[in-house]
Length: 260
Image 1 (cartoon, rainbow, N blue to C red):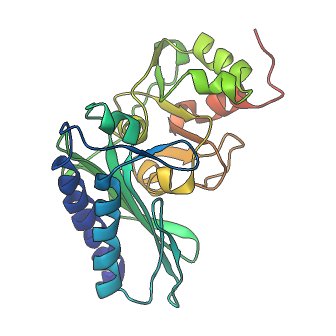
Image 2: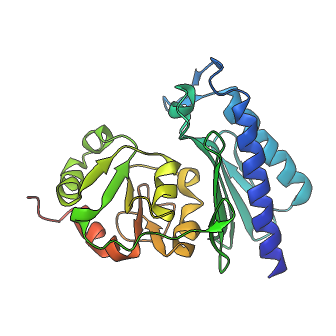
């Protein structure tokens, strides 16, 4: 439908423009503040989200908005936008280029378009329902590898599994998989969607961190959801995986799965 195409193109435009804005602060020694949850934030995060919110308020004044830095704004329309101006702020402040701007729009609770733009790498991953998944304007797909022993799983911070009481699940996964990499945050899900790795795991996430990935992974032939097997950004944890390994990986993550 024309409305979906308009929203999809808007999401791409805003994510890429906001992402480019962050480059003005990247590797400049930007001041880092610490939020109440002990996570870092910079002027780049705040400026990028402010820009997106201002454009959305002008173009779609009746749409709801939720952003990491400035909270929720209600709307009367059935649409809600989710903004993470910099996913991977810890990488950003350390000068590591794997951070991204994540933006999505949902209708009646279902994500219908999502974008993850990585300005320091020049990569933009985008998808909309029925429109396919696209990486820099070319169709992209998950891998077809079905053997964990030949597959790559990635995560942002392996130490978080132990801190959150989920080390047993991580041990089962790392014992089963060939390579356990550390290409994390939103970029890990881009790697799954583009077939470069088979799975990405997050033991803890906020909805805005991963809001774009249910539709992106689905349109790329894979799956995103929580460890319990629900296709959602609200589960508190996250899994991105190709279709061939989905059931096996979710079985390894179950709390009642046997440890080796």
